[in-house]
Length: 340
Image (cartoon, rainbow, N blue to C red; front, side, top):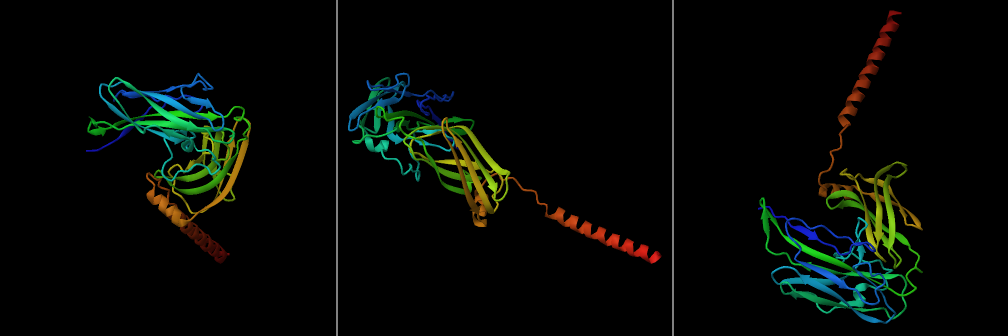
């Protein structure tokens, strides 16, 4: 039996400062919900996430109420996480993946200054429970913002079957926590750097993966454009443009330029990027090489590659035809001379 896991993620907060709610589907109703109990030092009361102001060395408990709207006991897991930016330019709070890193410029990790009173919460049917997060502001004065989150997940229940497909519903909530010190948020100048470029297979598709870093403890709202050129040429081979690319503070993130299912070809290339925010602009350029080995490995791993037209036979026929034509012209000229 074919098995498929559908993951339904409902986000309380996915972008700062916007609140994004994902839609549920007809396959089930989310059996629980979460609500931030906003404290007195909340800066913006019109949002549903924590946006608080703290003094250096200050300690504070933040509380979130988890509601169980089902008729059975639920077990919900909760983690404190560092905010990151995915390759689509969306700030996420589901935790760093294996091998994923924050930028080395990050001085205050949210996971280092916060701790949960419990990582698993059992909530009786129809009841609610409060989860507490202890936050300890850095001892020294800090600029910009510290951005993290609380990520709630519920283990999938029994599988449902629909048309021979096994469906498991997994529900998750992400709740942002933004911490700033009075007067120090806007003193930070945003800055970006290009760290690496690497061609290969990206989720079984050919493309170029580039790694950037946000050197500043500041959320940067940008438009992001990247292009791949063959060395010495002015026309781009492949491009990617994301109008709204939001970068988390001190995030190390990827920006991908996909090759539209075309095979990688060995050779020398140039990657160029243009990044714009409201007040700043960055331009990057990096040469890179695709070796035959890298191209072969990526093309072998990639799926649905476009079959490139093989023009070799056509070229051979053209050469043969041209040779025959030249021979016929020479014979004709010789015959004309003999007659004279």
